[in-house]
Image (tube, rainbow, N blue to C red; front, side, top):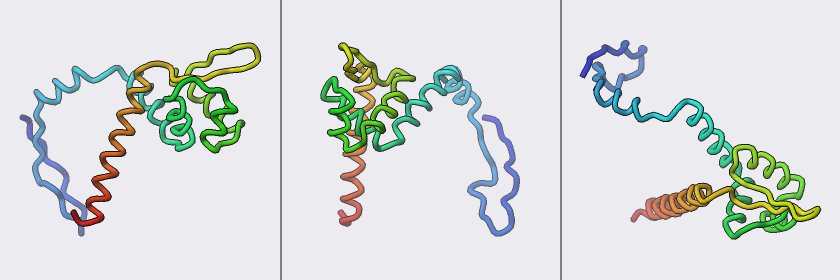
Amino acid sequence: MTRSSQPPAPAGQVSECSLRLVDADKVEQVRSRMPEEADVADLAVVFGLLSDPGRVRILIALLEGEMCVCDLAATTGLSESGVSHALRLLRGPRVVTVRRAGRMAYYSLADSHVRMLLDLGLTHVGHTGRDRLQMAAGR
């Protein structure tokens, strides 16, 4: 481990520690497994797309299978224009795909990884939501 001193905390603030220890071996081990910068940036884009509740509702609806814009709008409570815009954003990073049948376009989740990401996210939210409710109830 290498030691590096941390600058003193500004007046009126308390420093968490006065000496910082860095485990150089651990840092190197983690850095060697870090994905490429482009992959990290692509992942950030996908998570950024999931930051909008309307887009998340669209993706949750698509967990049930392929749907057209009209059905997605009716299901999510969004306008058809809003759904179209969201789908355009979700197609770029291959979160959803489109299948055309004549003049109709049907959208679906791009692959099982997107489904797994949504399933895990919903499970996590359900789990942490129960924890918050139990904490609020004093259990």
